[in-house]
Image (cartoon, rainbow, N blue to C red; front, side, top):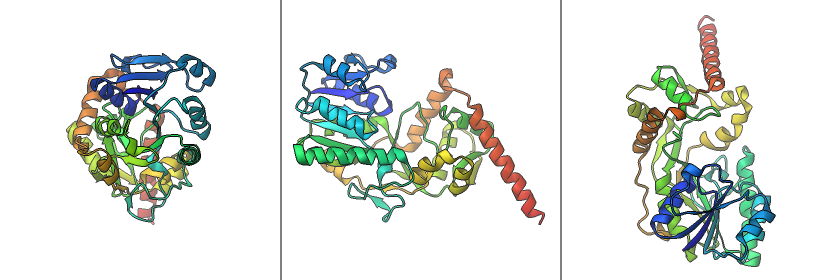
Length: 338
């Protein structure tokens, strides 16, 4: 199998790259060469900016691939570029979409590949939908061999899945938990969420690469484990050996205070999600996610506590949390004195 991964060093794609090489595939990674520490031994690197179409076209020359997978295409013009670059050069083109593209609010609590795609709250999701629409039209009208993959919240040991965190990652929330400070959870914490560890995702994805039955299909890949946010934070506390001081704040109020949360909350995390995974299991017989959230949380905590470089302070997010809880305490005092 000769495969080209555009990206190849991110949370999801790095696990896929490693597994592809373990299987003896001829693997090429096309990226800007910024995360060289995550390039696995044996991968051939094409150092280029995929957005520089002329340079990429020059570097790949007459190369052809069994599979091309783009992990860093987010807007329609980027997949249009990919079609120009790889039409006639690959037997399968895989686009990484997002489960956040599904209908919000949901009309049915179980999400399948046939659930409508519409998200009025998040531009990121609308762009992914537009990418899918274009690629499907290319498949139907021109035979472009596309497969669409929709991941849910996929993570590795470097990124602890959280309800809310700042721009610098998860450490500041972990730090608050360890110090006994309250941490924010949107709503009442009882909505369901699905996370998937990247090595589980990779096993399913590898089964899709080169799979002719997947051409022209949209496929969601994720774990079957759906947990409430409260349960997830309790498991994070178990991994840290402390009790989490959970404080619940309505999504609407959080967005009033921080409007840029609109997409990630109303357009994603504030919705309960349960996924029908029968399609990926039929295409990749024997696939089952093996890493529970309890185990994944332990892996993340172990990494964060043992890697000083991952313990990045986030003063802006810390101030936001402290101010939020101070305001809520003052508001409660006022109402209690009425």
